Image 1: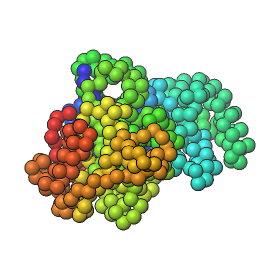
Image 2: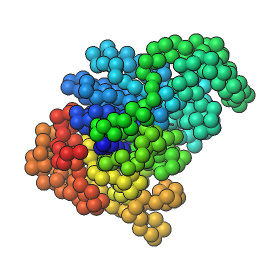
Image 3: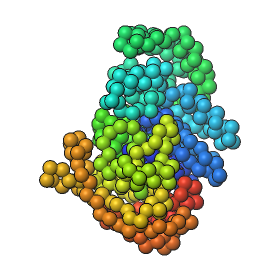
Length: 426
Ligand code: GDP
Ligand code: IMO
Ligand code: MG
């Protein structure tokens, strides 16, 4: 009954899409458990590069059942356009299942996401403006509309009528925006309902039955540990639970069914949007990381902020998620650097922090303490075993394991499937 969770250990974009895709070969089910189309997962499938926002990155294998679980917020327009894109590329989406309990992103969620950000001015979060935060807010406020509601348009209309009255008051009176038309939304979502009906089902039952039958289920996290609503750099976070615990609530499985929790560690760190970032390199080093690593947002096209790997963050991610193994991605991006820095602790007001602290004041103002390691300055993208890596690259990986106490199962040296060093089977 092995359940395996894959999570980002940073602020997202760690390369989860590529690693999910390669692990899927050995899986029976791949489950997205939280987030929405704020996620952008790039998968290079042969020569084809595909960007997924909602559909699990395990879609490319015929033997796998991809599932969008209860904890995800689904924009049906985006889901259908993703289904169409995949089908056009010859990738079947026939087996895709969507939870009847997943909440819908509605037109007013997208508009309010942008309006709230606009009003925050300099204090804005830098959201993806996809309506994810407002959709989760409605879910928690118990005025959300769910996938199952579009299967019964009468219920959908009833729920929409109640909620739209309040939303239109908000739009017109607070944000000075035009109101939304009830009939337009009913018509639009009615069209989506016709196409989505066959995908909507009881996914927790299916996942639990699969685990009972000894099937391998991979739970694919979106975003990352530091974007978690409870454990991230609040308020500069997303509105869901990307951490491992979120897989249990989001998919409807008990914690004892999880055998492994794998943390994806980019060889350096990136962040999109606002918020603290102790090892950020707002300089030539960061620019070099951005250019070599092509660090531009998959969802919004924004430049990603770049910085050195941060061990206090990694130690925190290991604890918060209960990680059992690590995967390093984008090691090849560091190949150009003569010297590589590794942040081993933070220093603030005469105190040293070797573990990411909850105090936002410390995180915003601390000074990262670095250890310098020699670079390898050679192309490593052809390496398929650890022996083929230069000594300095091996030392970098070994030092991270030494500082965190966890081994690496996989080291990724390029975006393609084959550009991978497998060390320990997951
Ligand atoms: P995700 O959100 O965690 O799935 O990550 P993204 O897909 O947003 O960003 C990761 C980017 O790095 C994608 O463009 C991947 O194709 C690419 N990528 C993944 N692994 C590697 C790697 O080992 N080396 C390089 N150079 N690129 C990689
Ligand atoms: P993947 O799955 C990186 C960030 C946004 C913003 C904050 C809140 O590709 O790793 P939201 O729209 O979620 O309310 O925005 O979270 N963010 C991400 N950053 N990768 C992501 O997903 C992200 N999803 C949201 O930039 O700072
Ligand atoms: Mg991404």
